[in-house]
Image 1 (cartoon, rainbow, N blue to C red):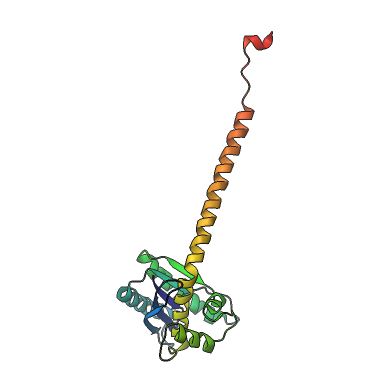
Image 2 (image 1 turned 90 degrees about the horizontal axis):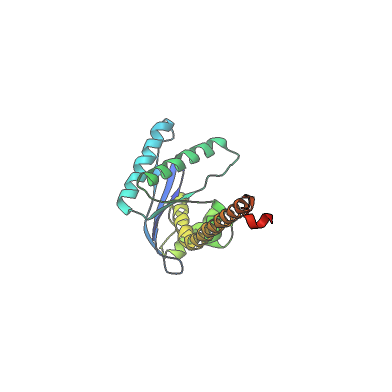
Length: 199
């Protein structure tokens, strides 16, 4: 599986590509950052993020795109920029028919380091170790993008099994509902009386 991880941001959007499967050694395909000038207007910056994303998608042709799930912070302006960049990444993936997976920061940290409260240095160190790199990717946004891709590779099998179980459960519930409706309908029908019944 080849996963393109995206650590969304309007100024720096981290992007990393990781290949592999759960339980096997992973390999980094590429890592980098799409940058936009802070003094440019937001629409122009979003176009630059979109162009950068398209270049990465075209070059690496991933099977899935993993994006950090945006969560509320105290700085609303930062959240808005992150959410906008996240939406651009999802749009680019959807345009190509690629599945998109969202992972929270704590999920990524827990998957890569074993604790959901790890700091950026710990995440960078573990990414370096897991991908057998010479040094942690810089800036931290790039390391975070690789961590997202690693998280998805490791979590995807369990998530697929969970999704299959949910679908199976939903199918069973639908069958039970149909059977219950049929039973109610059968009991509500008037019984046919024969001449012998009136004797």
